[in-house]
Structures are given as C-alpha cells and as structure tokens.
Length: 388
Image (cartoon, rainbow, N blue to C red; front, side, top):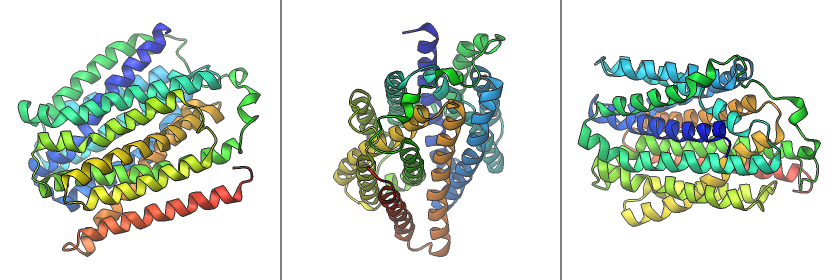
C-alpha cells in the first residue's frame, strides 16, 4: 500500500475513534454532569445535526479549492481548540457551543478523508478503497463506543475531552507536514474520470446515487435518535454507563461485519432492491430497539440494524465516489445527508416529548412514520426508473 494511502487510513482510524467517543458519549455527559433530560438531549442532537448538515456540504466544496490535506488540517485545529475549551468551561450553555464548534471542525475532516483515500482511482480501486475505508472507520468507531463507557467510568468525565484531544494531536502530527506542501491534493483531474463510470450499469448510476443519498439521512435519523436516547434505554434496562457502552454498541460491530462483506462482494452494486431491502430491515429493527424492555431483543435487533446500516451507508459513499469527479464535493454532500438525518430524528423526538411528555413512545412512532415515508419515496424512485 502506498505510504500516503496508509497514512490516510491511519488518520481515518484515529478520527473515527476520537469523534465517536466524544459525540456518542457527549449525551451521557450532559445527562449525568449537566442535568439534561431526554428532551434536552434530543434538542441538542438536533442542533448538532443541523450544523453538520449545513457545514459539511460547504466543507466539501472548500476542500476542492483549499486542498484535501489542508482542509483536514483546518478541521483538526478547530476541533482541538474546542476540546481544549471544554476542559476549562463549566456552564452548560458553553458546552453546547463547544459541541457546535467541534461539529464544524469535524465537517472539514470526513469529506477530505473520503476524497484522499479515493483520489485518482478507477471503479475497481474505489470499490476496494471505499470498502477498506468503511471497515477502518467502522471498526475503530465500534471499539470507541464499546470501550467508551468503561474509559469514562475509570478516568472520569474529563476524559471525554482529554482522550479525543490527544487523538487530534496525533492526527495533526501525521497530516501537518503534508498539508504545508505547495502541491497538496486539490480537486479532481477530469482525465482521471473514466467513461466506464456511466456504462454497463444495471440502472442509471445517478438515480442510484440519489436513492442512496435519500436513504442515508433516514438511516442516520434512526442512529442519532438511538444515540441520544441510549442513556434512557440504559436506565430502563438497568444498565450502567459501562454496560450501556457494551450492549449499545453491538450494532456498530454488525455494521462493521457488513462493510467487510460488501468490500469483497460486488453483487449489490447498482441493484436498487438491495438498498430497499436494507432500508426496510433498518426501520423494523429500529422500532424494536427503541421500544423493547428485554435485553435479548435489544441484542438481536441491533444485529439486523447494523447490517442494514452497513449497506445503506456503503451505497451512499460508493456511488458518491464512483459517479463523481469532484470527490470532496460529493463527499460533502454525502456527509451533509448524514447531518440531515442527524437533525430530523432528534427533532421529531424532541417535538414529540414537548407535546406529550408523558407519552415518550409517541416520539418513536413519529420517527417510524418518517422512516416509512422514506421507504415509500425509495420505492417510488425505483419504479420511476427503468431496468432497476
């Protein structure tokens, strides 16, 4: 593997571990240190999703002009500054602003990394690199979610800021020397784009790209709702923070397994029915996770939930890289779609709890209705397009 490519995968691993630890456990921090309830956490998650959606789209475009490495470096500096601030502030509203600033920083990292690992590749290379990229970030993210509760219980909640800050420092050490070079990677070279990208497809590539971009926000709507409510689910099941991290991270490992399989099997490429089947599985398992009072059901539902999420996410990123020339721009759109889902799920949940605080199940029903609407839109899109 090329030295720079290995560096990018190492950066992906570090970035995923640090950001998963911080953003997934931030809601435990607000609940247990700042006194936030479910509704407050959902409003906070919706805010974070809104910022991510708006900033990621713009960050992808900036990366094309500024350079992928420089954009990554800029995002890490902003993220690191926010984490340092989190160690010294104490008022709840300041921690909210730190979350917003950290989100802005992260928005510059992922589109740049997605472009870097796929820069100059043909379809075969994109299939391989997207798969490896997904396995790397999903694997380290799953470990962070799995071990995060134990780490925070052992080291204290200050570790929520300290550990990601140390990781950001390592990332900057890896990327800063490359980012300062005058020939850092920028936008795509049109000569690298093969006309085969639009040929020999079972269905129009851009239609599948639009379908994947549609499905991915709904998938992340489910994820963000689940993450924001995981402290409440843990309380309902009598789980400690450490146990919640272990039991609540199983879907991450299931998604990792799906990524590994899809990396070596290309039979799902440009097959809309695979995408729709994954979407249906994701929706049903989400309802089970959110409403169950049995630990066994929580475990089984997460296995299906993670596997379905794997195909949906892989589809969005693969088609974004395979159908596009401006990879950072399309990577930004891919990440913005994630942010849109991160906004919608918690927003619906927060509104539901605001209108009917004594009926928390109504929030789950509202999110489920939105998931059903997304599934209908996918099916409609498939039927409108021939040869799918």
